[in-house]
Length: 468
Image (cartoon, rainbow, N blue to C red):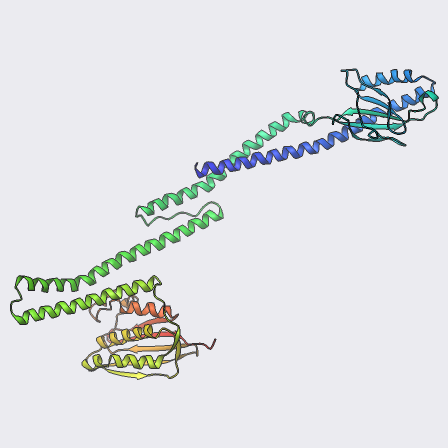
């Protein structure tokens, strides 16, 4: 069953249930109104009969004569006339014979009113379970034959609920039908207002499943449906960006891995087909294959590490790390490489800079920055390293070289995967991308400042360890 039909059916059932409850409430209200009206009418009917009965009694008539007169009143009004004694027992019961003969009323002792001193009305339940309305008036006793008669009681059957509804059934059914039609039309419109935006979301989702990530939905309908459309649009934008990055990533990886693979394949082929005939050529080919294999393995390792970082599969330790000790250790590691290029280190550090983080991860960040600075420094150049505090809350580490610098157009892309700075600096690869992931995981930032011909300056900011 479709959502549209289910919404319509649910709303229609609610409307029908509501109309049924309204009809029930109306019937109950009418029940009380009709009872009150019938009791008032019965009281108006009983008053003149009581007056007539008193007149007959004063006229020195017999009980049979009184009964004959009351029988005429019972037939005329279609009501039971009961003459009761002081205990509520029936002395004489006049059953209406017109317009149809009815059965006498059987009531339990004490059911009928007694000791009546003024007009009284109410309800009684007969022995057969039927409910009757009554009106009672006291009677003055003057003659011995009528000495037992104390109360005149007129009784009529309580009008049934169907009899009550018959008086309003036609207008009620017309009103109910109109209300039902209008409600069902509103249900159709409401179901449509909910279903149409959902149908658009479904269609757009199917298009996305088929590879079309440009789908967008116009927010419309109820507030919740608008929120759904806006969330869907944000999701499609994120998916589209993710797919675009994935395509670029695959292209970058393919490009980066192709170069070492081409060298490996070329020199391996030279060994196989005999092009590398002498020992010196074979040795050179083997060395190049070894170097390119190492480079290829390093790139694959970096890819795996970056992938694990971005998928939160690497957990960094949260230990106290002394920035000064870490920088000194990194300088010692790269001292041989710097000496080979005749590059000197200028280390200016502030002591007691303690941050919370992973010592190995932060070493990897600083080694990467120093390695890039050495590679891009001219022979005999200098790499400046500094550390200090910022507002007493953060530690700042800077690494600056005297290399060719970076053009402003390329600064925003330095931390992207495999980004190559055209014609000026050496390839960036994945080192800076991994460094940024590590720094971000430590709640820090890494930035770069540079101008062509003036070198580059990388700045890492990390929150200082607190005493909490």
